[in-house]
Length: 358
Image (cartoon, rainbow, N blue to C red; front, side, top):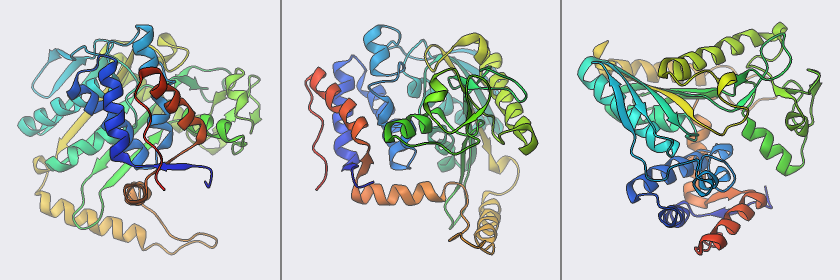
């Protein structure tokens, strides 16, 4: 990673908010979007952070092309005691997704559980950014979204499912919270983009080519290939990831009324649905007892005997928090190609990208 320059997160946030302002994004919304993307970078989820800003059709590119409304306010269009639907109005995804998660938390505070589907939104960054919003409220958070059409169903050929991620976050006491954030495909498309930028092959079992044959060349994905469902081939449980991806299509796209991934898109562009949820722990048992038992669970997992060739056993979210501590202290590392897109964006809008650290 020696060729990666590191940048201060605070200076990047100030710069990004200035860029959004020049594109007509209201200040409060700009802060929401910037926080979602830089939070991904701080947690080491590099494929869902500022690498997307200049090139993805849900952000700057979409605003310039007129396919993303920079100033629209999300609206609640259907509501019951514990559920609701938010219409993102074709605006920035993190704004609609955050509004929906806040609504889910409010409903959970009143009823014990809140679930909100989002229609007509856009790419929202990393799912964990939203599931974590519930933690400070003594709740378990759930977030799902529909990704770009990129996954082949088990035993099939060609893309029929979105690269659909999901996240669940649960609070602990003295231990860091449990934070699951996974694609229901073997890998997210952003990881293929990063491998392509770095000129590297990808592990066998991530993708297949246009003939449904296994390949390690990330370019094969853009030549008509597809990503395998989580689990890979049928023999290694790929049908499980296939089913999870369909489940997310149902909870995000069909429940919101927007549609399913194969009918909506051929890429990550266009209307995107989400599904946000919050469960009030006190609606089940005392929060203190839950947190204490979570500590016991996480410590038990981390105390597992380490397999030969491995250094330690992690629990979900642990690597991301360690990345955050490092990157808050030493800066966020960015690939030169990502920096190139940000520098060009800064030149185009007349707001130069801040200099790297050191």
